[in-house]
Amino acid sequence: MAFAEVRQYQPGDDIRSIDWRVTARRQSPHTKLYEEERERPVLLLCDLGPSLFFASTGAYKQVRSAQLVGILAWLALWSGDQVGGIVFNGRELTVQRPARRKKSVLRLLDTIARQQRVAREEQDLPPAKDTVADLDTALQEARRVAHTGSRIFVVSDFLNITPDTSRLLGSLARHNTVSALRVIDPLELKLPDSGRFAIAGEDGPVWFDSSNPRFQQAYAQRVRQHTAALTECFRTAGVQPASVMTGDQPALVLQTLLGPRGHIG
Image (cartoon, rainbow, N blue to C red; front, top):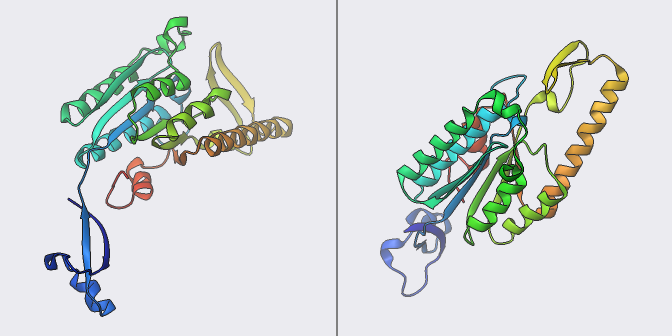
């Protein structure tokens, strides 16, 4: 049984459930109400795609994504919930249906570790047409796997959203509680004021001069456009957004999001 609320005592209530502290404070009998705990499926979507293989500070976005999903998986299991997940890295997508077993969490973590170990050469190759494993594909799979009333966390950088992303998130949120955890690197929000920098690209390093005013303006405009599109995507879909920076400690961010007791509600 789980605590639900405290209300004023009514005839027929079990006197053993009287909350004496509240009774003393309010000078009238109050009793505690409990409800039966029920297992709730928790589905964790973990994006390990190529765009997450990046960081200018802290850890790779891919690492933060894996850490967030790992912590959430253990919290859900300890809360008595069923745990499942969908792990995808651009080339491979693995679906694991929710189950209330420690082996289920360990299998999910093993899948994350295996997909993280994909050779860099394979990451750089374009996926075959029949093996696309992007965010929209994962959301489609989540809609097929998730039972009504599930708690769903989508962990991604959401850099590659499409016009379908909002619709897919919205279809999940209509019958489930959905949170979107966006993993961000500071460099994706604002360039340094000056200096020459190199970023790895498909054809080798790409150099840019952040002191160039036109480049700064174009970059800032692109950031604003993507931020606005993502905000509208989450708003239209009706999901709960939160952000995690690559320099943040995932456990502290989740403590702020879930509360000090780490309850996945």
